[in-house]
Length: 106
Image (cartoon, rainbow, N blue to C red; front, side):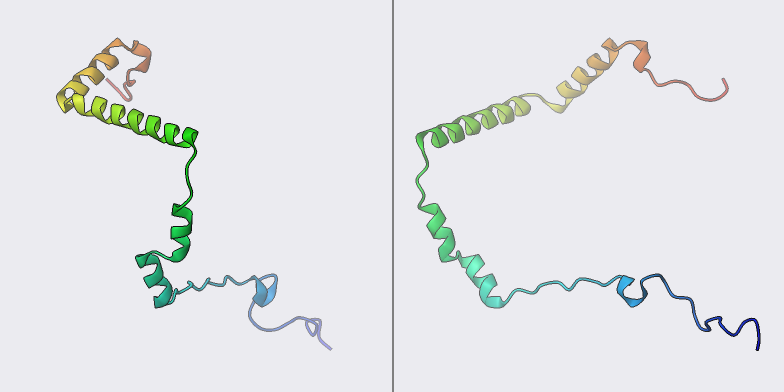
């Protein structure tokens, strides 16, 4: 009887055995019928389009649209050269605290 009779032989295994191994998820494939229905517009989409919006919802969307148009027109009014010069002026106004420190000798 040897001192090593109780030792297990074979390759090392991770804790948890086979259940702990990483399993890849399978991608769900959609049938061609579902793809065609989505492309053409399914009958469920029509049901949601018939819903009337309230006055507040219409007003909110109109104001949102106007604000977006204002932002676009404001951004389009300045040229690239104007934006660069404005940015440079802003950097000049900052204190020396924001300057990039010199690193190394000299």
